[in-house]
Every structure is written in structure tokens, then in C-alpha cells.
Amino acid sequence: MIISPILLEIRRKFNYEFSLFSGVDFTVDSQQCLNGFCDFILSLSSEQLLVRSPVIVLVESKNENLKSGLA
Image: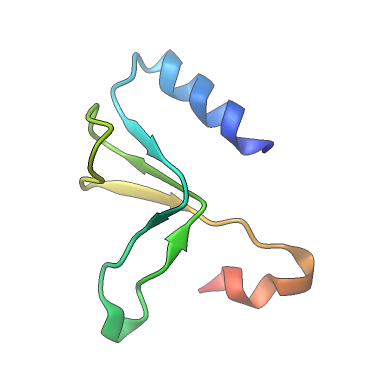
């Protein structure tokens, strides 16, 4: 809940030129373990319906589960 308002403000400052997704399944390549749910995805598209490349993925990792956030 800390990062969400910051990302929304950045999106507003950039005149909504990129889209912001949260809790979306982002499967790129399951065989290379590039899959899962991301905390936040920023997509260089003003369209807020589909995730389109290029993207930036932010994943939150808790101290008690740090290894799962390193992948």
C-alpha cells in the first residue's frame, strides 16, 4: 500500500502515457520459470486493458520470504 500511491502519482505526472497493473498473471516463458503474479507491472502503453511490451515488473518481497522475491 506504500508504493501504489507513488506509482499512481508518477502515472499522473507522465500524463497517463503508461499503464499500471497490479496482481496480474504475467507468464512470459513457463519453461524458464518466467511466470507468476507480479505486485506491479508498468507497461509503456496508455491502454489500461492489456499488458503490452515493454514492461517494468516490481515484486515485493517480505523479510521472512526473501528468496521468493529474488527470482
